[in-house]
Image 1: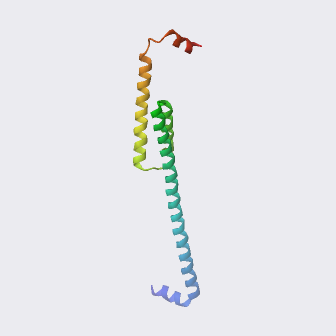
Image 2: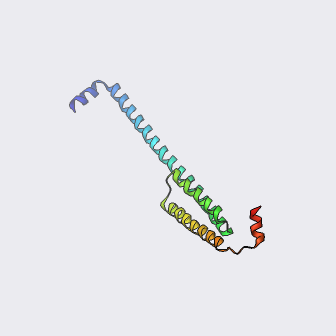
Image 3: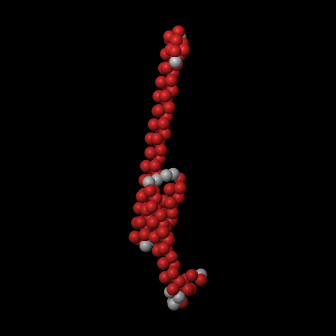
Length: 128
């Protein structure tokens, strides 16, 4: 410790230059870390907004009765979640809606196959 103090007294300009350079480096590192954190939070906000928009679209399509299109929209939201992290509530909402819409689609398909007493005109439409 005494050696460092002695060296600092002998080489004052060099010691001050090193101290200023160290402060400049620490400032640059702190600024970079702040930029990265702010950028990450901005990307998460944009991602959450896009996922929410896809979920809203899905719910609107489901209310209209377009189950398969609603399922496509919510699967698009799920693929957006694969891009980056989102809050847990949004992820849970997407998973729940995917499961609900898949179940609704299975019910629709089951009801369609149950109705085998279709009129001949209906069968003719799909033969052509």
